[in-house]
Image (cartoon, protein in one colour):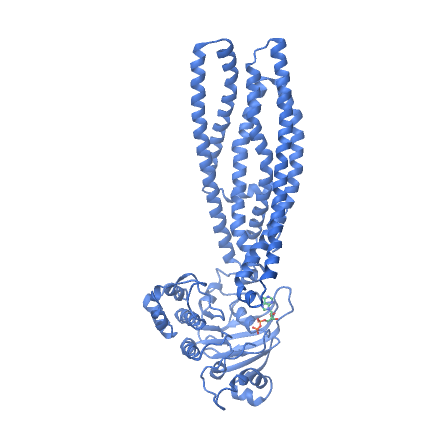
Length: 605
Ligand code: ADP
């Protein structure tokens, strides 16, 4: 995916947008985090500030009244500090979780609005990574920003203030050490950013490798491809490890940098303060307070330098998330357009030009008509464009030229959802969702009653096998665990389509052969489904072409012949050749002349 709208925006711009996008509803939490941050900084300052009085008043001056007062202040201060830290951590954590949930919802909503064209050019592993990893990255960035600004930065400012007040002269040391350390950190951050990007790419490779393996496990096993797959996966995993190691190395380098310069600073201060106390007889309270402030400042300062690296790594994810959210849907939904109104259901392709992005055109001026209420069978070699015709009627893709009319209305101008309402698509591979059988059928029409669902299942010849399952209609199906045969899955899909009660049926017949009993049942279900409706079917079975009102033969994106079976066979051209090659060859096992609508599975092209 390359829609680099904000890919090059600066890190600050990204963080700003992250806050803006997550502003609504969270403003109160943001304010609370800042207030608690001020509390944390103030208590840190009190802790070190008080050291001066403890040393000078209690230990040197030996004042008993101050002893109790100061001890009391220290205890109360610790109490306040403990609670502010607790609530701050709690609030930051909660805001982070809310941001993840929100980011995932937004990405998912957005993905649902994107067209089929987007999905065909984006690997699903990429999307999985984005919705899991990148949403978490948004949390990491926000948490880091909060912890470092609302806590560390404020604490640092408070402590430096204490240092300057206690000893302006010694504070000069910060001016020397500070910039050197910062420039070292900046160099490390730059490199970490590059590595983090590469790491994301390798991680995607690991996830996509896993998905492909799960998908293709049968092929992998059948072809003994385990070793090769293992090697490929190992290489991807190793890459992730090496890059993670590199990030660890870069992170680790920030520690010696800070420690060495920190040691130098503290050593210098001890030398200066000790000299003044020993030789110039000055009270050590202020120096000790200064030293404590510096020691305490060390940790937030280190974290502030250090946080740049996880922040940069997180921003890579946030950037990718925004890239996805900024992908514009290419399909006009026509949400305010007129509804498609269907009378006869005639479908007309008017001089269609179409090609998949970056591919050679599939159609160059295709004209085609499917009569309303009739069944049109599409036959033709693989790759001739049959499935593409179905996709274009569903308006999954934009046309390059021409129009598709349903009862005279251009489908590009009507409300897209109203187009889909009028169509039932039964595709080759039945998609079942992890839900009950009843619900899976009900997807055809969400407001259908239980009785209607069962009626549709009966018509699709699915009722009996559903009832034979342990929990009947309440059996939960999932892609892996559902003990359904291919034929049963298809019948559920047919029931879903029957329930939809759409005027137009688009049917991509399964190429896989089924046992003749299943075939017969499916045939009966289909007959019920397509009766009286405009049906376009990609035909793979002899019974289908025999039963069709019209057969259209598609070759290389053009309709080369149209007519009924007998006419086309008598013509002795394209269809006759297909018939011999694909349909008749399977017929050799059957009694001669047995052209019954009995199902005969056609081989996949
Ligand atoms: P058929 O259904 O007749 O087998 P298709 O409509 O699937 O043919 O394919 C027509 C042509 O379009 C083929 O050359 C095929 O490779 C190409 N094609 C199909 N789907 C896509 C896609 N999602 N992206 C790019 N090219 C595609």
